[in-house]
Length: 150
Image 1 (spheres, rainbow, N blue to C red):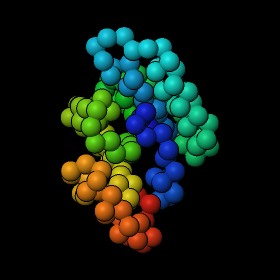
Image 2 (tube, rainbow, N blue to C red; image 1 turned 120 degrees about the horizontal axis):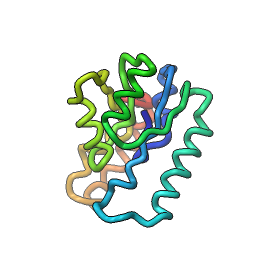
Image 3 (cartoon, rainbow, N blue to C red; image 1 turned 135 degrees about the vertical axis):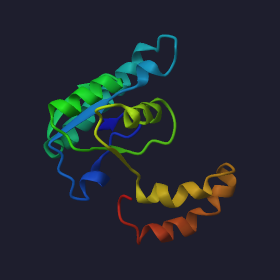
Image 4 (cartoon, rainbow, N blue to C red; image 1 turned 90 degrees about the vertical axis):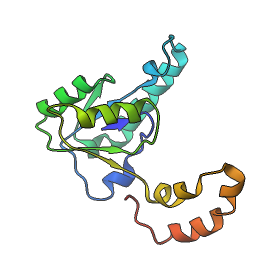
C-alpha cells in the first residue's frame, strides 16, 4: 500500500517483494478540517498517478482508495491479502491511518518498511539541522554498507 508521504516503492520492491495487488491512498483531503486548495489535491493525485505509471508492472493489480480504514480492509479482503506492506511514515494523517488500520478488526498485519538511510539518520535528528549536519559525513560513509530497506 502506497501513500502520498512516499510514492517511491523501489527500495521495497528491490528486496524481492512481488505484490499481488497494490493500492494508493492519498490523505491530502484530510490534512485540514477546512477545504484544501484544488491544486494541493491535484498535485497529490498527479504524484500518485505517476507512481502507478512508473511502478505499475511491479505492483500487481492497482487500486486507488479513499483514506479510510474500511476501504483498506475491504480492499485487502477482496484481494485475499495476508499482509499489507507500506512505506514507513512517522507522523501525520498517513501515520494515523496506518495506526488505526493496525487496530482494525479483520485487517491483515501491516508491515511498515523504512529506508536504511532513514533508520541510520533519524536517531541523530533530535535538535535541528545544525547539529544533524555534523553527522552527515559519517552517515554517508555508513550508507555505502547498508541494504536498501530495513
